[in-house]
Image 1 (cartoon, rainbow, N blue to C red):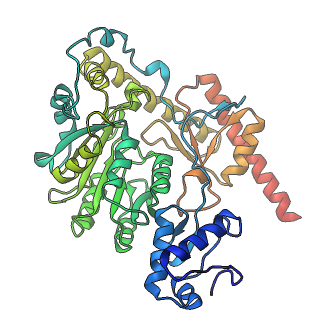
Image 2 (tube, rainbow, N blue to C red):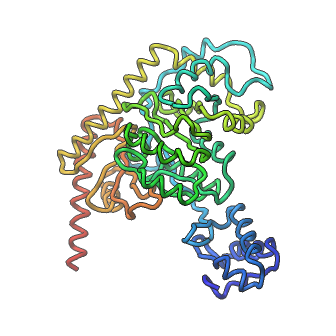
Length: 451
């Protein structure tokens, strides 16, 4: 048996074998990341049919006890939590890794709230408020090839939409294509769902064609793509790249394609969709959290009719629907000319501040270029962790690229920074401190090489 020959695995049925392995995990004989015997080795060792061993591992995978990694074999699942967006808890350092919008640029909903009185909403009402649906239908048509057949629904934010879309299409251990580096919430969603992430590299034009083709060859049943302001890189799909990706997906019309256009109304880039006119399983998700605030937990999803029906079933009114009061508040805000103008000013602010900070870094000898989105993705000449440690000594808390990597370079040489809310003095201080941290990290590396 490849793996640990001394493991006391026993059983004749799939359930008995699964219970035996689960007990080894619970007693600490098997720890997170430990490899398990191959299906063939396990079956031969126990004298059972190979299908019995497969069924045992399937039970454990569905329970989240083990994960299957293709040629990497089957291993005990790691329950460690995935890093999350937001402020670091109880830190005395200046946090420049939050991923948050500027609170001063989030529209004040007070005036809209005063005019929301109306008839109450009762059980059995549509999932999406009819008034919001009318506005959202035009919003979601932009650049979407199969718009004529689209159906709309709402969820409690983009992360909720993606989780429910994957849950209605996948089962545990199904493969899903995720961008690499990847949005932290997508990594978390794949982990808690028990899905097998297949990394698709991202470059300056977005998800790569070769990466998507390789993922499809590995049998992914869903693809999650960020068409613009990809988090963490800030990359947006070019028209050429989107066309090439559509051509690849044309041969896989029943693979669920989810586009998360999270930055939508704030984006400085045009929207280019990878969803072709004949694709059968698709969904476009646009949330309001970046421009109306994270507490406005609402996203609109446009999808093909079958996907819409399945999604709506998971949002049955009276159980997990999105409050119609929240839907009406959202509509009141996005149709208010003053709010729309404020969103446009916020978009210009984020772009200008990020571009200015990239120029500051370049002036300090760290080549940088601003993408789209709330954050900057900075390339370093040394490991990011060594730089972040030096920054902590200077009073800054930065987020390294290691947290976002699925299968790319480790240790990462990237920092993801949220700097749009820094004034000029603090921005200059941080840029100088990053340059100093790089010099210090280089010095330590040179000393270690001499030694």
